[in-house]
Length: 145
Image (tube, rainbow, N blue to C red; front, side, top):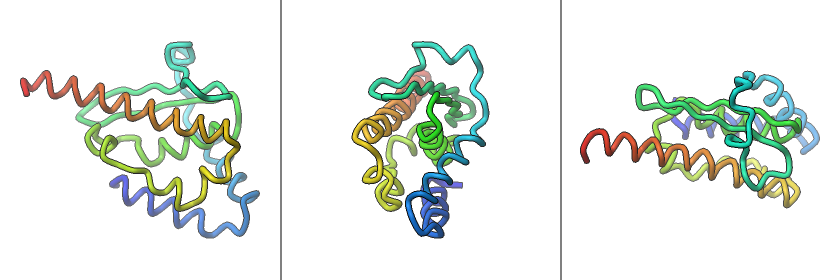
């Protein structure tokens, strides 16, 4: 599925909830369903900068797709990174770099987070895009472009 299709799916899922308590419960459930990150990636090298909670993010690159894994020590934050992974996992670096992640604003996520959590969300997006940029540059240099 494309990033746009996945964003539309999330927007639809969030539209069925009446209030933000239900939406937070859904975000928490997404975090509970997040596959466990390998312990070797739960180090300082993989911590997201700017997050109040501890969030570890790792990216692999295979067949021109980025494979993301993550964990957090906070349940809401773990759900937020799970949302991002749901949309951006198994996508090409170029597509990740081009996306605006409009679903974040459409579902009202950023406006319903505390300033520190909103800052953490931006840090997560930035780190994923940094991985995408690094993989894109690596691929371009290997192809001699």
